[in-house]
Image (cartoon, rainbow, N blue to C red; front, side):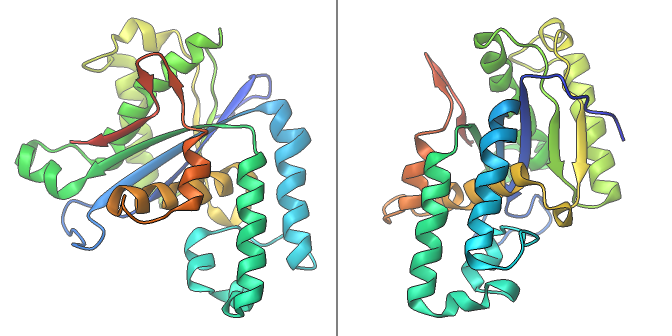
Length: 249
């Protein structure tokens, strides 16, 4: 595991929504969504970590609960109380208020796996690796706009083999460049990538988790009301012609 250091202005947190496998595609959820949330270190320390702990202590006797969107939707485990309508309404209002008040910049990359494999066949890239590549092509613009070249990135672990494959692909395209960004530009960045299990209860990963699903739902059903997406949409990176939102292909 690489040391992420402690001096960067920003920290990035990655979570995903959907299965990245191209072998089986769920017809009801044929997309893979990658969410990168970038937060200023001082904001993370002084505001985000305390805000998340405060929310948890409103509903539990400790802050050890992991805010996980799927468990919240299903009212699983420690979220069983959400089966009570009034409690669910109160909790979701607190979550919406939390996300609304968080200072962060969000990047959302979506791969429509069905269209991806139809268009590229056996040449179709791994959705997670491809989404991360597209994300970093936009992150480099964000860093330049903020006169920064360092961004430690923490991603949710998906297993030893998967983490190693993604890490290898990540450093490979940073070293070799992409179709749109030459290697020289990426080589100016310092972006150590590390993986942590969801059980580590890292606040930034929970923010990324809470942001990913509403965006996926909006992509699948844009006509449906989606208050959570409306809040998150205001935090998606946009500067000139560069936007931290991409649905591919």
